[in-house]
Length: 217
Length: 215
Image 1 (cartoon, each protein chain N blue to C red):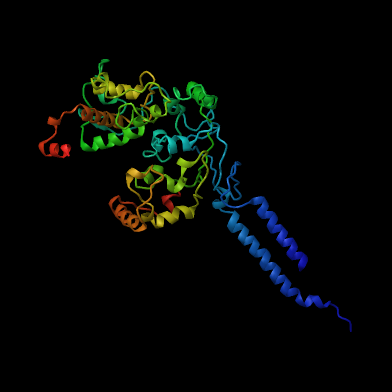
Image 2 (image 1 turned 90 degrees about the vertical axis):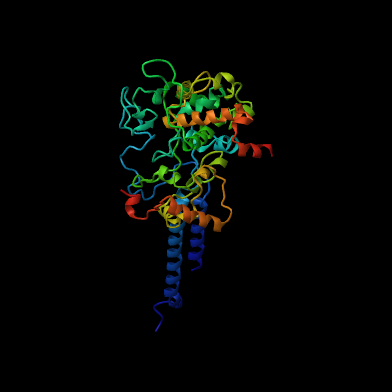
C-alpha cells in the first residue's frame, strides 16, 4: 500500500508549532515595542511656526522657565507666553529680524501664533502643573532637558506607568523648591536624595495619590 | 519551512525598516492607533477650537468683566482685585498721584518672594544686582537698560515703581499681565533692599555685624 501522506508530513505538527510560536512571538514583541507612547510619542518634534530656541534663551541666556511660563505655579496648565512677553525684549533685540515677523504681527493684531503642542496628555487625564512644581517636582522630570533643546521634542513617554513610577516612589524625584527650574540640578548622591525626599514627603504633605480619581474624572 | 523562515525574516526586517526604533525624532503628528477617548469635544486652554467664531478656545474677557478673586491683605485691610485702591494701582485713590510706600506689610517672607520674582522677571535685563548689567546688556543686545541704583529711580515713590512695573515705561514692556499684584509689591520691597545695600554706610550695621564686615 502506497503512502497517502508523503514522509515530510510527519514533521508538520512540529513545523506548525514552531511557525506559530515565531509569528505569535513577533506579534507580541511588535505590539510591546511599537504600541506604546515610548515609540508613538517620544521623539515628536513638530516644526513650529517660529523657530524659537529654548537652548538659546534658557541654556545660554539663563532665563528662568517662569519668565515666560509665568502661571505654571498658579494654574493647572503651563501657559504658552503671549507674544507681548516676547516683545518685552524683542522690541529691541533683533527687532527687524524676519524670523520674528510672526511674533511682531501677533503682538500688533492680537492674532495668536499657531504654536504646535508637543506634550499632550489624553483628554481624560487631569494633570495639574501647579501642584507638582509647588511640591518639588521639577520641569525636567516630564519634559527632559528643554534648556538644551534647539527645537522642543517629546522626551518622556508620559504614559500612565510613567506617572505611576514616580507616584509610587516620589522620594526619588522631589528636590528643593528653589531648584525646580534648574534643569541640570543633580542630587549629591542617591542616599542624600532619598533622605531629602522622605523628609520633603512628610513636611510638604506630598500625597502622591494613586487612586483612579486623582487623575481620571 | 525554509521558505517560511525566509519570508518571516524578511517581514520582520521590513517592519523594523518602516517603523524604525524608539526615540528617533519625527515631524509628523503622532498616530493614535487606539484613540479611546483621547480627544473629547471640550475646550482646552490655548488651543484651536471651532466653537467660537475666532477659532480659539481661550477668549479675552469681555470689557468690564471682573475676575473672580480672593482678597489681598494690604496695609489698609483686605481688598479685592477690581477695587480702585493703591495696592492695585499704585495711585492714591481718585488722584493721579503715586502712593509713597509699599502697600503690603514688608516682612522677611515678602522680601524672599521679591528676591525670587526679581531674579525671574527683572534680572534678565536689570541684572541680579539691579545695576542694569543683565544678560541682555552683556551680549550687547540692548542699548539702554536702566540702572536701578540711579538717583532718579531711588527717589521714585514705591507707587511710581509699581505703576512702571505694571504698565511699562519707555522701552520697558508692561509686566502687569505676567507678574501678580502681590509679587510686584514684593519685587519693589526687594529692590529697595538692593538700593539700600548700595546706599548704606558702615554705621547702619549693628555692632556685631560690623566686625564681620572688616574681615
